[in-house]
Length: 289
Image (cartoon, rainbow, N blue to C red):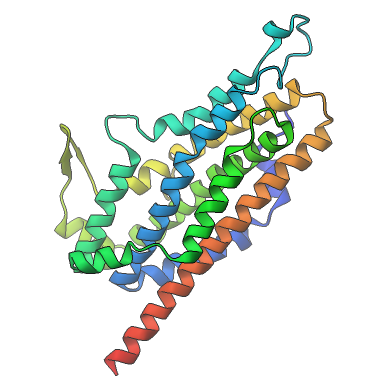
């Protein structure tokens, strides 16, 4: 029986509480066109870094020769399994630029559409693109926690746990965003705008819907890339168990430490976005008085 599974993480963390933070933030954001734009601006900015640093983790694992070895193989060179673990991690990084368009381009299309929905000028959009100190600190923490240190087994195992949290929580984030925008607010607000005011946009010979960025990652009553990436992370973690000499309990502890580190960052991100959206809404209400 494999040690790591989705059930293990669900037993270790209170996901209903974690999702309350995410849900409250999205619901507040969609209540106003400008706050929706701010939410998407900050969220895609954060995910742009989280996606970029996955390849660093994969590289750090691959460069750690003889750190993960098959105990049944006596020849050291033949026993090295680091690159196999790296390949499972790299699936998520390679998807960011697959299928003829990068996920960053899809994010930009969605953000441009949200800006049009909010009727924001170029100047206003550029003002909102200024990165606040709190967001820069969060991004720096993501890069530090994600990439791991080559030849440092503890660091790498914690970082794979960090990656597991990113994919597992990301699947739920996108699903909740899709649920709130397209189902809770069906035929209203941004959902109505998407249906009535937008058409698929041609990019390099293909046509993409502005909401494609969300549903390609995760969706309500379905799954997307994040869920598939998480399956590959589980495979990587279970290979770590096979190819390291430490006990399962010790490896589990390191993985959960990494997972918890990402949970803290994710919760901080959504709380800060909630605070910024609330401040803008309150400020606009004062002005209207």
